[in-house]
Every structure is written in structure tokens, then in C-alpha cells.
Amino acid sequence: MNRVTPPPHAESVTDASPLLAARDVSLERGGRVILDHVSVQVRPAEVTVVIGPNGAGKTSLLRVLLGLWKPGQGKVERRRGLRIGYMPQRLQIEPVLPLSVRRFLTLRQRAPEAELRERLERVGVPHLLHKPVQSLSGGEMQRVLLARALLNRPNLLVLDEPAQGVDIVGQGEVFKLIDDIRHETGCGVLMVSHDLHLVMAGADAVICLNQHVCCTGRPEEVSRHPEYQRLFPETDMQGIGVYKHDHDHVHDLGGEVHEHHAGCGHGHRPGPGGGSR
Amino acid sequence: MMDGLLDDFLIRALLAGLMVAAVAGPLGAFVVWRRMAYFGDTVSHSALLGVALGVLLGLNLNLMVTIVCVAIAILLVLLQRRQELASDTLLGILAHSSLSLGIVAVTFIEGLRVDLMAYLFGDILAVGTNDLMSIAIGGGVALLLLILLWRPLLALTVHEELAQVEGVPVLLVRLGLMLLIALVIAAAMQVVGVLLITALMIIPAASARRFANTPEQMAILAAVIGMLAVGAGLWGSFQYDTPTGPTIVVAAMLGFILVHLLPARLIPHFGGR
Image 1 (cartoon, rainbow over the protein chains, first blue to last red):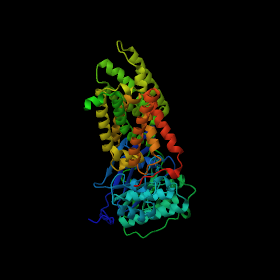
Image 2 (cartoon, chains in turn red, blue):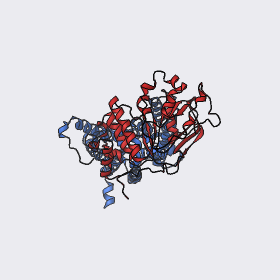
Image 3 (tube, rainbow over the protein chains, first blue to last red):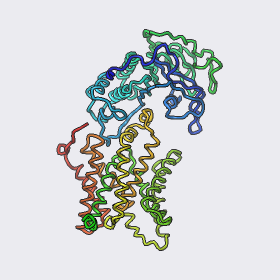
Image 4 (cartoon, rainbow over the protein chains, first blue to last red):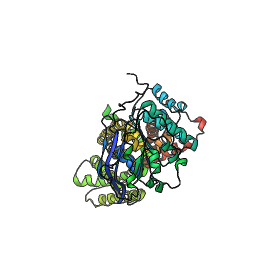
């Protein structure tokens, strides 16, 4: 078995059943409603981006989808054999813990040094292998985290604010890297971000969240949605800079944008047939 | 011949101290990494309550101390989850009330001639052959548990959610850590007493940090430094006729100061990454 190069397209592209889906999930914490009847799905080989203002429940939704939190209602379905590569939002390691990047990468699973080096090379930081993790800059740490997420050959990458703590130039590079990697490996990507400009550009599907799902669809559709424009009034199409990359697949579910929910307030449920499925 | 050797109270004291330091050091590394120093303090303060309960119920004292420490540790974790009170407030309440409760309970037990000072600050010179056996068993189980849990514990320490997503049974590993701390406290109680146990865990680990490049190096060095402190403390206490438990902690502290006064270029760094 050749363990050096990740297999392209772990799943068949034509298999459109979702990798991961939340069905009518609600969550309350500390007496506050955080998620209100949320239904979302992450399809293979697509970049799904969850956007929303601060406190919209983006990270909570991710936690529920990852199985870290149990939803109060509804359920989460994962495809069998799903391997998740998770990149947490921030990772701060106590200076008192002596830990090299190599050790950090192999905390959960051992891997030959050549493979570690190759993963680091892919994310552009091969020279960091023997450095203490505490010495890395924000951007370097994000790249190392990405390399670690790739180690178990995931068919789904889950990224929580992947460009946090990275400067503007570095942010673009991180998103470019993620985009390249998912084209190389064919893995699906689920990303949470409040950084609309950079994120929506590379997305196949956007979920606009504000406790409930305000609207979902392709980036250009979501950005035209009234609810989206209400949440992010300062952005317009120019500002977002949606770019069209060449799709080798068709968005046959494009009709799922919920235009008919134009004035959606809190507590609404997806109407019959109008859910995000 | 072994019997004759173990008859010597100094040899018994040294053996007991070395065994305790050998497991307290590596566990202390986790206490330092996970910022659990005050947590360890709180749990060890409750050990006296275990002694009182053990005497009352006529059970093995070490076993009872272990049970009470685990119970207090679990209670702490449950209370911390509710997040109504800040963690340090909660720890302070539990630490001091369980210590006071223990002292009150111990003095209430009629007919029990308890040397309270021995429990508070240790009485390593009074370690008998039976005590030595129970320290060896408790310490051995703790060391085995630590080796088994090492990798998942380390993963948990670096990032709990990441570890959970990657399949570490977080709850189980956490419970294992509680049991570990309780076992070490029960074993260390005789050596340095309930008030000073945490010192024996964190001071050697903190000293070891300056030399270590990997978590494993830090753990092993913490054990070695702790054992040196036990030897030096025992010698000092014999030489100057001072209480042994506090003298061991003073020796550990002197080592810590020495290590941190050394200029960086004189610090030997061990290979391996």
C-alpha cells in the first residue's frame, strides 16, 4: 500500500448523498437558544461554508456536527466510513509543555518521518518539523494544523475559522491552500468563517446562519438574498468578489435557495419541501 | 538479609520516598501542563477525611484515602461544569472545608491516638514494612496506569476537542487521571503529608522543564529530580534534626532555584525531539 500520496476522490463524485448532515437540530445552552431547527448538509467534494454574525451559533453547529455536543433535538447523520480531519479555531500550547511539531503531528497516530515531512511540505512549512510548537507564528500554526488534519486522509475537512490570527496576505494563502488541497484529494470541506470576502469566493455552498438557517445556496445567490443583505449590510457583490472557478460538476440542487423566506424572522421552520435538503 | 536491611528505618524511609517521587514526578508534569496545581492541592487536602473515614469504618486507610480523593475529584469536576462559581472559588471552598472537616473528624474519633502533624506534614521515618508494601502497590499501579494513559492524556492536554474528534475517550481518560492523582496522594501522604503533596509533584516537574525537549524527557527528569530531593531532604533532616517532609520540599525548592539560576549555556539539553 502506498501511503505517501493521498488517494484521489475517496468517494465517488456521482454519489451525492451527504457526508454529514444535521436534521432539524436545536440546541439550548444556559437557557439560551443557540440553534433553532437547523438543517444543513455537507456534500462530498464540495466546499460548504457556514457564515453568520458573531454569536450566530456557527461554532456550536460545528460542535454538534462533529459529535462534541449532543443536540437537544434533531439528529446528526454521518456517512459510514467518514474520516474527519479537524482543524480547531485556535491552538495555544502551554510553554511549559516541551513539544516539537513532529511530536504534535504524531500525538494520535504514529507516522513515518518522510510522510510528516511531505505533509508539511504540502502546506509550505517543511522546515518546521523539529521546531517547538510554541515558537510558531499564527500563520505557521494554522499550516501545521492543516497538515495534521490531512494526516489521517480525511474525506471531510472541518475547519473552524481557519485564517484566524493570520494577517491579510496570509489569509488569502491559507484559503488558496485549502482550495488546492480539496481539488487534489477530492475531500469535502466544511468551513466556518465570518470572513465573507475570502471565504465566499471559494465556496460551492454557503449556509447563512443566525441561530436558524437564514438562507443557503451558491455564494452569488446567498449574497443577493435579502436576509443576507440585512445581516451584512456593508457588503455588496463587488466587495465579496465572488469568483467563478471551473466546476467539473453541476449544481443540480440550485433551486434550494429559499427566496420565499424573504422576510424570515426567528423561529421559522423550513416549509415542506423548502428545507435545505 | 532483606528483612534485616528493611529493619533499618532510614532505609525504609528512603525507599518509600524514592518510590513516591518516581511516580509523583511524571504525574506532576501533567499537573503542571494542565494547570491543575490547585486542583491537586484540593484533592490532597481531602485525604485527611479519608483517614478519618477509614478509622471509623475499620477499613484500610490507603484504600479509603484513594476512594475519598477520587470522590472529591469527581465532585469538583461536576461542580465546575455548573459554572455558577468561578473555579478558584470552588477549589478554595472544597480544599479548606475538606481539610477542616478531616481534622475535626480525626479529633472526634475516640480512643484514636492520631498524630495530626504526621498526617499534615508526613512522617516518613515511621514508615513500616507494611506501609512500604502499600506504597509499592499503590505507586506501581499508578505508574502502570500513567504509562497506559500516556498518549491519550497527552493528546487531551494539547487540545481536548481535537483529541475527542480523533477518537480519544475523553471522559474515561479524565477519570483515569483522577484515579492516578488519588493513588499518588494516598502513597505520598506518609512521606510529605497532605499539605505538601502537591509540592512533590510540581516542583520537580517545573525544574525538569529547563532540560527537557520532549514530554517524556520532562516526566523522567521530574522523577529523577524528585528522587534527588527525597535523598537530599532525608539527609538534611537527619543532619539538622528537622521535620523530614518539609525538609524534602525545601530541598526540591533549592534545586528549583539552582536550576533557574544556571545560565542558559550551562543547561545541558537532551537530544531527541
